[in-house]
Amino acid sequence: MGIEIKDLHVDVAEKEIIKGLNLKIKDGEFHVVMGPNGSGKTTLAKVIMGYPKYKVTMGDILIDGKSILTMSTDKRAKLGIFMLFQNPIEIDGVNFINFMRNARAALADERTNVKQLMDDIKGNIKHLKMSDEIINRSLNQGFSGGEKKKSEVLQLSVLKDVVKLAVLDEPDSGLDVDALRIVAENINNVAGQNKMSILLITHYKRILDTMKPQFVHVMMEGRLVGEGGSEIIDRVEKGGYESFSAK
Ligand SMILES: Nc1ncnc2c1ncn2[C@@H]1O[C@H](COP(=O)(O)OP(=O)(O)O)[C@@H](O)[C@H]1O
Ligand SMILES: [Mg+2]
Image 1: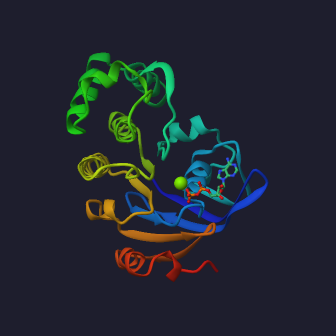
Image 2: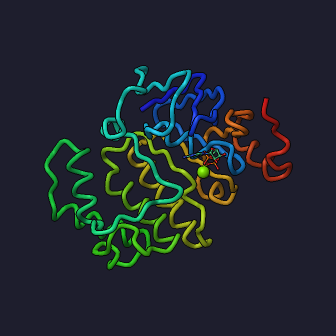
C-alpha cells in the first residue's frame, strides 16, 4: 500500500508542529525517519493514524491516491494502517487474547478462528521470547518497557495478514541489546513475508544494524531535511543531527 504526504502542516494544541512535510512511500518500500527529540516524529505517526488532537491545517495524506484526512482512526486501521506506539498505553481489564480477538474481528473480513488465533499468539510469543503468562494479563499493565514493545510487535504479528502499512514509532526505545535484536528480527520477518510498506521512526542507529531501510529521512523541526540511503545513517552517527539544519 502506498502513502503520499504532501506539504503537510499539523497543529497540536494550537501550535504548529509539522511545517510542510513531504514524503512518498510506494507499495512495499521501507523508509526510516530519524530525528532528535521533539522534532515531530510521533506527531507524524499519530496524524497518519488520525488522532483527533492533531489538526491538519494544510496539505494532504493520500493512501493509494485517495485522501484519508476525513477518515476516522478505525477506518484507517481497516484500510491496513497499523501503528506501533512509542509509549503503549496500559488497558486495565482487557487481556491480550480478548484484545486481539476484538482487533481481528474489527479488521479482518473472515470470522476469527479462536484456536488458530491462540496458536498464532503462542507461536509468536515464542519467536519474541516472551513469557506465556502475558496473554492472560491486562494489556501492557505492569509490563516492563521491553515487554510493552514486544507486546506491540506481537500485535503486529497477529494482525500481519491485515496490515499493509506499518508505522513503527521507536520500537527500539528502552530495549536491551538482546530484546532489540529479537524485536528487529521479528519485524523484519513479519513485514517481509507480508510485503508491508514500513515507516520506521527512530533516533538511534542501533536498530538499523538489523533492519535495512531503502530510504532514510531526517526530521528537524517539523520538516524532512535530509533524504537518501544508508549514507544518511552514517552522517547522523558522525555529525549528529546538527549537521542537518531545518530550512
Ligand atoms: N498532545 C500534545 N500537546 C501539546 N504539545 C504536544 C503534544 N504532542 C506533541 N506536542 C509537542 O510537539 C512537539 C513534537 O513532539 P513529538 O511529535 O512527540 O516529537 P518526537 O516524537 O520527534 O520526539 C514537542 O514540542 C511536543 O511537546
Ligand atoms: Mg516520539
